[in-house]
Length: 210
Length: 210
Image (cartoon, rainbow over the protein chains, first blue to last red):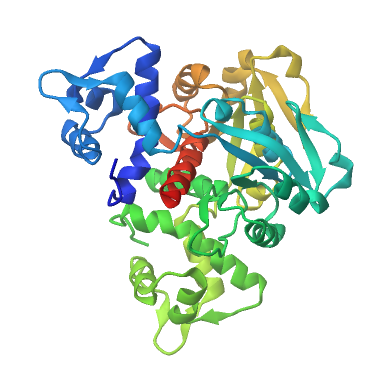
C-alpha cells in the first residue's frame, strides 16, 4: 500500500484509531459507521472519513467500516505486524516500570534487557528481564537483534548513551530523559517529556483560576 | 499580564523555552539573542520572536533577551510560581517511578501520597511518600490540599477513579491509563499514552525501511 505523503497529524491520530478499533473488536462489534465512530472518539465523522481515505478508504457507503479489517490494516501501517526488540537504558523505577508493562509486548514491543551504570543492579531481573552493566551494551547489541532503545536515565547521561546506541546501529530511540537529543536523520526519536506535560496542567489550571 | 488568546501551539512550546532558559541560567548566560536561542533550540529566530511577542515581547533590539527575567516570566505564565500537591492513584512501578522523581518537586509539583487497591502495598513508602488504601481517597482529599492526581492504574479502573476524584473536587488529572477520560469542561486532563508513542516509533521505523 502506498502511504508516503500522509501528514504527521494523521499519523499522530492513527494509534488512537487503532486503540478504539481494538476496543470495538473486544466488544464483538463487526462494523461501524463513521458517525458511530465519531461519537465514540469525539472527532467529526468527516475528519474520520478524511483520515481513513489516506489509506484508500476502508469504508463502504451504507455499510460502514469493517472493524477487524480496519484494525489490522492500521496495525500494518503502524508497523505493528512486526516484532521489535527493546532494550532499556537505565534500570531505575521508570526503566523497571517499562520492563514490567506486559501490554507493550502484546503490541509487538518486547523488552529484552536493561542496562545500568549502577553495578549493584547488575544481575537483578524484572519480569524475567535481566539488568546488565552499561559496559556490556555494545556486546549485547552486537549479539542480539535490537531495534529500539528506551532512555530512562538522567539527562546528564542521555546524550552519551544515545551516541553509543546510534554508533552501534540502533535506529529507534524512545527518550524519557528531559533533553532534546541531536541525532542523524535516519534515527527516529520519540520524546516523552513528563515534566512538560505536568507544566501544561499547571498552565491550564492557573489560567482557569484567573 | 494579559495572555488569554495564546494558541495551543504556543503553549505547547512554552515548557521547552522554559527548559532551555533554565539551562542557560545554569551555564551563567545572562542574555541571549533570538538568533543564538534559535541555534540552540533548532527553531527559527522569527518563530521565537513571534512566540515571545505573545507575552508582550521580552526582547530589546540589539540586546536580546534577559535570560533570568524571561525564565521567570514564562514560569509565571506556566503557573510554576505556585506549588501543586499531587497524589498518585496506582502504586505500581509507574506510580512509584513518579513518586521517586524528585525533579518534579523542583518545579513545584509535590507528590504527597499514593493510593492503591492492593492492600499489601498499604503502609509502604517511596521517598517518604506513603501508600494508602483506595478506600481512604475521599477522606485524604477532604483533609489535604490536593490539586493534581496522576492516574497510573490499569485502564479498567481509570474511568471510575477519575469520577471519584472529580466528584471530590480535583480539577487536574495526569492520565497514564491507556484510555480517553470523559470529564467536565472545567477539569484539565493531560494524557501520557506510552503505547501510542511506541507506535509512532514503529511507524517511522517501518516506513524508513521500505
